[in-house]
Amino acid sequence: MTASPFVRDSFQSTSSLRLDRNSFPMRLFRKSKRLGIWDPDAIDFQTDREHWLAFTQEEQKSLLHMTSLFLGGEEAVTLDLLPLIHAIASEGRIEEEMFLATFLWEEAKHIDFFARFLEEVVVDPIDLGALQGEQFKFLFFSELPRSLRRLLEDPSPIAQADASVTYNMIIEGVLAETGYHAYTTAFESAGLMPGLLQGLVQIKRDESRHIAYGVYLLCRLVAEDPQLWEGIEERMNALLIPALGLIAESFDLYEKMPFGIELEDLTEMASKNFLRRHRRISDSRGKTFQEIQELALAVVSED
Image 1 (cartoon, rainbow, N blue to C red):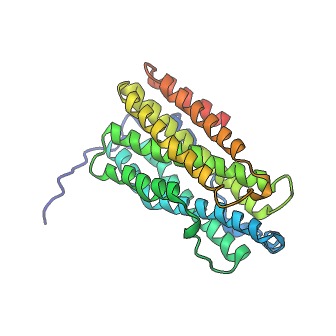
Image 2: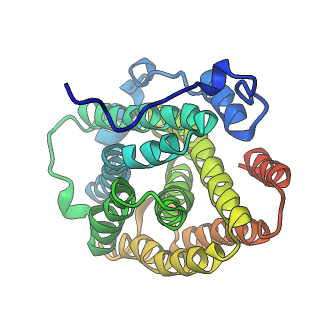
């Protein structure tokens, strides 16, 4: 039998280094252990089903539209996430890998939640692919898998930055957060779809940890090599255009979007969150490792 070319000679956890349990990734890991253990099967959708049956055809279409984008997005990141975990693990960053291990579990659980919502609330099987427009397809069919799967062949810092910008900053930080806001605007004040909103509270909490790690990773990469910032900024700005385009194209199917959802409101929120994180990553140039951890911790408290 041919021996593997990779031979390990020690483990950090059993060396004098031990795990850095006070590091930012380990703080996120502990948060995930406390807050990430929720079960989609425990959510009651009975009232949601009653509300669904009372909606107009246009209201049903808009709810299916939002759900199609979310469920497709959750499946996409679940399918494409492993190369990022592998790239971080290959660098021996055990604390980061431990937290990243929760990503896959949580994204898969989000698929389960939305799939169960469709099964128990909408009931009738419907092909939702027609509701996914060109900007959605560009980001989720092309850019997300391209940037993450690139890491299988090229795990370099710039490739990691490209993947994290696409996944954490744009898919999660712009689109997912804007989607939560749309759902909340539509249903919370009206007392509608309580099961859906209950699950979204849990999903948003999960995603906030993912975004926080993405900011941390990008800040760490820029602190280690400030020259990476130019490429990160270029990538963030380039992907913001189709992300905002995806939000806008969602309104093209309606003369007036149901449930009082306004394009200007969603665009303003998306841009505000984008600029806040853009500024944090930019400010990481010249920072020490400890300062980077404190910067990332501030994002957790805000999110």
